[in-house]
Length: 333
Image 1 (cartoon, helix red, strand yellow):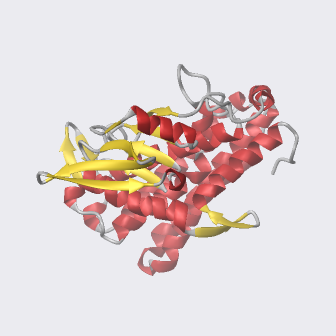
Image 2 (cartoon, helix red, strand yellow):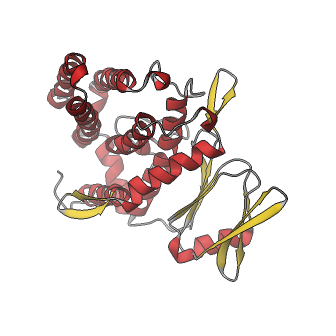
Image 3 (cartoon, one colour):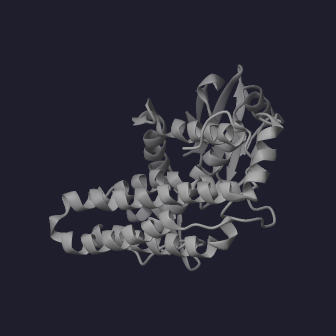
């Protein structure tokens, strides 16, 4: 399970070798105990706290602690000091970033993201016959952009990076236009917005992406992959380029969860708070999102590459596959 603290004043400490979360409400303190072996990660939003004993218990049990901004962006984590795997993986990753392999993986990951977006719109088409004309138009345009990414070739990814980003970005714009178009009118939005989100949909999606980003980073570290050495997203100061590359095929997990919450009208106006130039997800909104997102990632099983596994496990599976491909232990897909 993921232990997610988002209530202001929530305090994580240790009692009888178990995690205990204390939350004060209405002049009472509610305490919840959780065994360490049941916890995979601990997520702390702003306004929460933990003890050094809780950190020690987490480290001893290989549990990472992630600190999140209000919008879900991870700003730091506490984890053990082990590398995670052989340094050969990181050496080969750096070599791959300078050659043809970088373009191969870039096309693979960006293409998977675009395929997921197209599949999502195709799914919408099946249940909305009144919008067939519009959805067919969007699908045709998105498919053409997908073919551009598939057919691009170059000696190095830098030679075509701007083109790939352009096709990917245009496909994403069409995709989110489509999601907004088919949603109930009160939830429609004017495209993607980030810091701050301009509407509730983007506030939910940004938070889900932030949580997903932290999950992907952990999966890469466990596999021995350097989060900072990317292929398409290049080298900037303290920028985890590989995390931003590798996350692309899994963004659909967040998209589907958030879209389902809105299309099912489970999101209320009081799930977000107004802030300067936008809106922010509040305690109730975060609880709603994380309940459904964790269920979608952890509890539901899917058939993936010949195995029945959770969606969260698919991320780790692919990270290990990528690491093994880098050092020649398995053939690239």
